[in-house]
Image 1 (cartoon, rainbow, N blue to C red):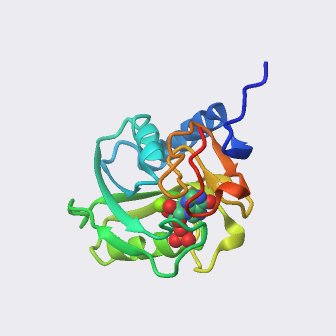
Image 2: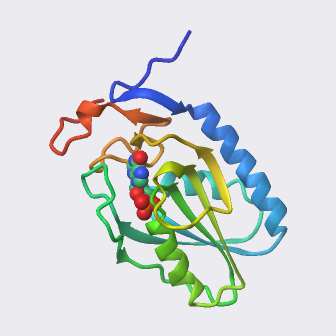
Length: 189
Ligand code: IMP
Ligand code: MG
């Protein structure tokens, strides 16, 4: 029987099973690249929380984890210009193999900003990994070293991604219904 689609979603772009499978593939790629090296993960929160949690527990290497909180969207579905660091990571990254993780690469401003913050601290290596890549919206010249799914220019929620802090707990990734994409819209569950 077909699974019922969450009422906030117009369409599903990646089902729970598809995400699980793709995360497994990404973990295998990362394992090939890093071998048994220790990896310092910097996760851009809140959006990358679920992706980071699922990905890192599939990695056999020693892992250090820290997070950086960035604001870019607040309650709108469009980027508000310059992303702001609300809370930075604390771990030292100098001389470390750093893997920067985000939920989605959109205009590229967020990933470019955090990548530069880490780069000036002289890590041994620095790679980027995103679950979703919205190539059409790119404003900054940046590509992720590892990307889960390439998606069209639609506003998506679920699996950590939100609209106005809602819908992060939807287990799949889907396009948010247009009528729910306005600040003050009711929460649908
Ligand atoms: P960028 O700086 O424009 O690349 O934006 C990246 C950030 O914007 C991501 O970390 C997400 O938090 C957020 N974002 C971009 N597109 C979407 C979307 O379709 N749904 C939810 N959040 C998004
Ligand atoms: Mg984010």
